[in-house]
Image 1 (cartoon, rainbow, N blue to C red):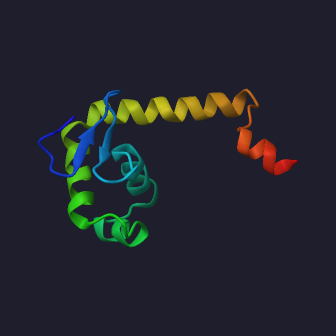
Image 2 (image 1 turned 45 degrees about the vertical axis):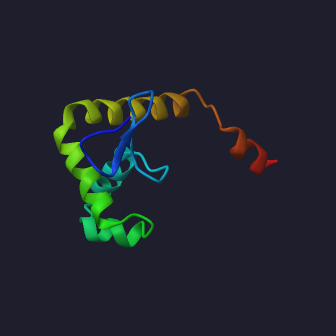
Length: 97
């Protein structure tokens, strides 16, 4: 689905991603918040993203902050839930064997 953000697309599950990549807007925002990275540092860490894509993703985040913060919180809770249940991904299980 097209948005008014040139570099952002929203899939059928209403998850915004950066056009031409598999990077979700929330993934980029979490990285920025966790490390305090500037757009330039994000570009250094993810050289396949242009500064235009990064700025567009950050602008999208600020325009939809409440909704995306809820999504981030939901993802964190799911990770905590999986860790608490002792579930291990199939990949981790295979690597341990």
